[in-house]
Image (cartoon, rainbow, N blue to C red):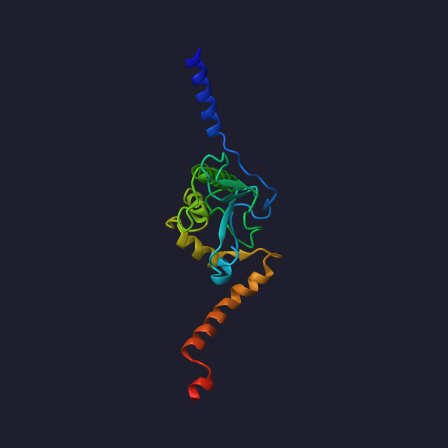
Amino acid sequence: FSILSCLQSMARDAQRQDDLVVITGKNTQEDLPCAVVWTPIPMFTHLFPIVGHTMITDSKGTLYDFAGYIPRAGRSGVCKNVGIFGKPVKALQFKPNAKASQEDFDMNWDEAVQTANKRFERQVHMGFVNNCHSHVCTALNAVRDHELPRWIIWNSVVLVIAMTLLGRFVPGRGTCFRVWFFAWPLFVLWCVSRWFYPASGMLST
């Protein structure tokens, strides 16, 4: 009897370990389906505007966000419709190429997103590695028939470049940051010029 009770208890513990709670909010993005979305990280993004937090939406605009798994917490490392740093201000939407139908593309996209979610639900966030970019890139590398070249292998560097060059600002969001994004290069040039070419008064002395 004791052995049977022990086995039943072990089975219940294993079941609890398998069933992770997914933190769910109301931050859906129905207007941004099949997209990689981006939001600023306070302080870090203000210093380096290309640095931010990336998330991904499925074909219905459901937002998935890798926040990191905490061992024994019983919660999945991937949040749903939350956005730990707020609503996205930039988006890079993907569309099927000429050979694929929208229905088939949506199905493949959703499968890729769920694959990434499953892979990262027990992954610990490691800061500069194994982070939100890793989660998004895992999904993108599993997507077929999108309009971008198939030879692209997605990683953090490629994703940052793509979001910087191809991502668009979401209307009505992040107005102040949008101004800073374009003003930041001028600010850097001004700081460099002040460093190498001090004020005229100092030069005259």
